[in-house]
Length: 353
Length: 177
Image (cartoon, rainbow over all chains, first blue to last red; front, side, top):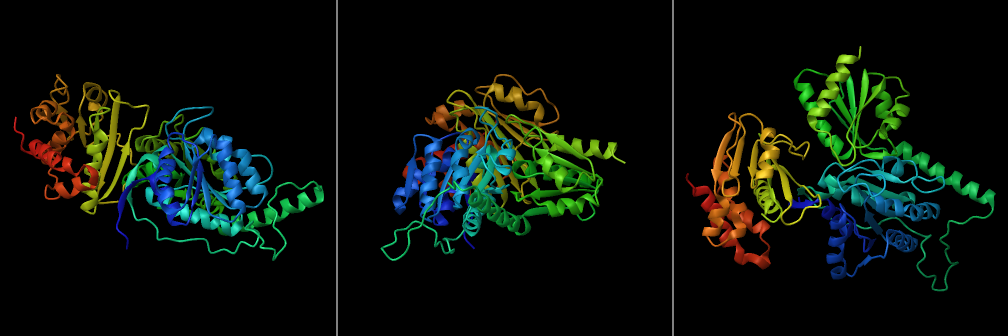
């Protein structure tokens, strides 16, 4: 087992990406993710990689699009306002069926918002922030260890399904240090016959494109893509179930909110309240099955989010509104305390029959 | 056992560095831990704080809102966090920079003129490590791995600073009212 080191979440992403064979990083600085770019700037030149600070986020994502077309592992990272700027490029990458990693270390919004942690880009990440019918695989780490592990996983999934993948973190995850066991060196294992790598006169050239002027053809492309999405929804939804066996109340939370909520669940259990937690690890695909299963057992759900209530909609859909879903939230860079979540659990318990 | 520590003071006092030292110390002891800085638009002279959690169990929320131990290195920090300390907890005050006394009577309080002591040892930037030494002593932390922990946070390029940091911590440990 490798030795554990202390690292910030942002640095762990960068190091894990390098270990996963990523040699191309394009970005633009923005708090609270700048350490990703800083780490890449320091390391990439030493290992024959490319670090490029583009003139804007739009530029950076289009550079990512370009490298993705060659089949090389490539990534960009930013925080909320910067991710908004990247949406056009993400849509193109999805439309051209290319793998790429986009990291969003979220901060409060809308607009320039603030620089403190937030989860209010949930809709943008899971419902298509750019135009057109498309999806991204969205992973939500809750620790520095997961920041590292999910970076490698995101590359793998993106390549397996030829689509963009996002690591959806927040300012806390990016800035905190925890012991982390860095992943082993790895690299892509998927054949990429579609990649633009030079034909050497031996084959037909590949075309990377998202333009289909014949509507029949574009329709077919969309339908094929959604068949792939369906398979992903069936096989790649990830979650952690915590104290759910006999739970009468189910907290649902991801990322930093899950860390806080876990404290509250443990505290409530000590008081004899039968509460558990489902922590989505992918928010697209959303872990519908465990929520649906819980809906038949629990009395109520509590969605703990750093937004005005975005994931709560997916909980209602997955549970088919069989049970009430309550919201426990703080926004704008504020984070609910374990005590606030605990109070909400008690309030819901007191109010539900 | 879980110890939640909040270190708070001015930017430039080495609050984050002291927290990192404690975090690495925990790492060497094989403990679970988290280190979370405030990262607002802080700058030299502004406020800075740092949450460090050391635990035998996996750490839940990394945010310390009710510290077991508060280190206050300036008055705004004491004003802001004094009431948040858990009953029976501990407050360590840099008495050079904070003239008032702690109002709470349900916590253990230690006053140490860390900034003055740092000036006296001709290392004015090391009040953070002096007060950390005091924290280690009063909270009963292990002291056999101070040097190893320091080596993790003092970069190799600045190895010359190792000794003076070590001395600052020891001065904090040995300080008596």
